Length: 472
Image 1 (cartoon, rainbow, N blue to C red):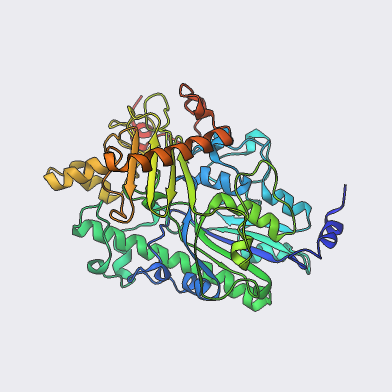
Image 2: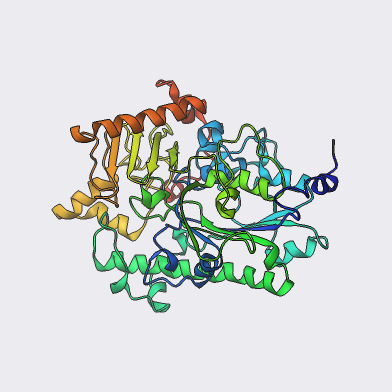
């Protein structure tokens, strides 16, 4: 077996004569729309905007699963979530048998580590891994760099949690000068002051996240490492409002993505190619001069970054989900398989008899309709009696048919399901066939209509506060 440093020497004649450093800046629950460079006129994201200006901005980047740990499972393995057993669900275990890119980079001579939120939430320590699938954990970037050997390439994962719901403290938006009257309220949410104020509070956290990421980039500038570092700035999934996180609409899956790579990526470039975060692992391997593994379903997009011809068709992404929180009696999942193209979103709800947002009554985690987190907006929508509000409630909380189809040109916010429209039957049939082919090609257990294997996997998340506080 070749030793790591010798291997790096042997690949020096390839595309990457000197493997670059890689910095992954990954937010927690941050949607595509909420960045200055992506068109938001209220939030200030100068660091993200700079990476876009000095690198490539992507308009069609999507998470593979609208849920934290399963998307992060796909990122570290480069594989479709349904191939990863427990790791396809939130608060799962991570089976040690699945290879992760960080281990390969370490063997190839890279210093690999993370700070903040790596692969999480879930349990890896009791199932054969001593180190987080994202790498060794560090207190921060300075501590990581202090352990780095001189001249050693590095991969660093900075997982911010600034934009997680528990940070949306009331009044923080106003304190940062964000005018709630100017924020954009999606059509799926009620346009009332409390919702506007909550969006402003969330945007304040986006700004704080952006500033924290900027500190790491400033440190690279001071150390002289910035020009040999590939910066990837993105999010693991969409925001925690209704119709967002845990749901397969764009509010839950469409994420910001910008990549800066001096000398390789044309500054100010904009790509409409479809990128899945599953594509990250093979991309990181290629940046390090390594080959993608046969089991990977993701495909490196180094060719897109460098403007090279590509054999990969990048006109779509596949989206899926299993169990998010444990919010249905019996720990039941809400399985979905779907495809997103430039023109359509097609979703197949494999258990339409179940509640997509979780049971209306508290079962174990979060609360009623627990796959929608407990925002002030959710509380308002749950208890409102007005017909307009009840219609919005049904849109995000109500049961859904077996198939959904949205025409993104006429309905970009995915509010009107056209699956029953006879004029679109050929489109629905074609997209459904693509989903089925993907499921078969990737050996999805859900090919068997009877399988409920994900309902049997353990859930490592805690009980809802109501259950914890209940008297025995």
